[in-house]
Image 1: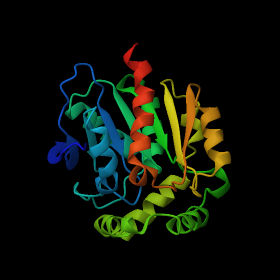
Image 2: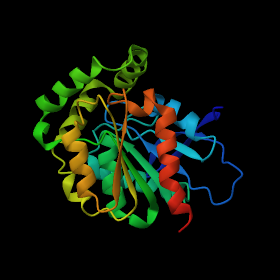
Image 3: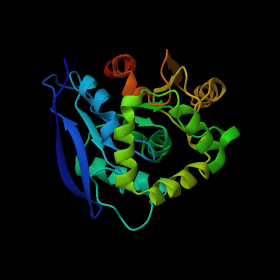
Image 4: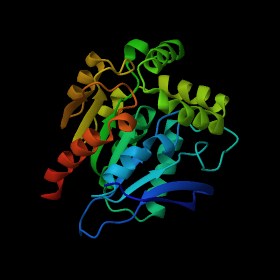
Length: 255
């Protein structure tokens, strides 16, 4: 069974912001899950996970400024600006503490937000978190993405091309620069909520050594590796990913 998703727009910090969301389930106390996309994409590639997880939790997938169906400002937001906008988005929706799921560059945004306002985050998922210090340059990161493109399911290509064209290549390139300038380790060691580090087994952007290092740096973290998946594990393996997120949230519901 899959949840039905709908789109809505709200003015957030002066910017018309698009959110793809599921209906709220009837179970009281079920924590909402917020999915934060990566640097060249949008809500679209997260749809399989949102539809799967939306059967048990309210799921929200906002498009960050300049991406997807949200308004496109004339400059590229850096990481801290994305964090500020996402915090304003949480306020606009009057969210209780959420399970924040960030993928790739979105994991950097999610980690920084969890440090900036820990009370807003009930649990954290860092999926395919960038960026590995051994490839923390434009050339290193793009090189690994090219390798990953050979390992991804071909049916994703039209979705990803549409997202890049929507965002504009210059914005994608600028966001790559923001990512490689961010020392994510400084945020990881300050996270105070239960955290799941999640990666595809065949992800060259987040190799085993880096995903293990991320897990060690976060004080309360565990690692889940999804067999056979590459970097876009949230898209290609929504069932196992949703199961891992639900397992993470079970102990937090008892608190």
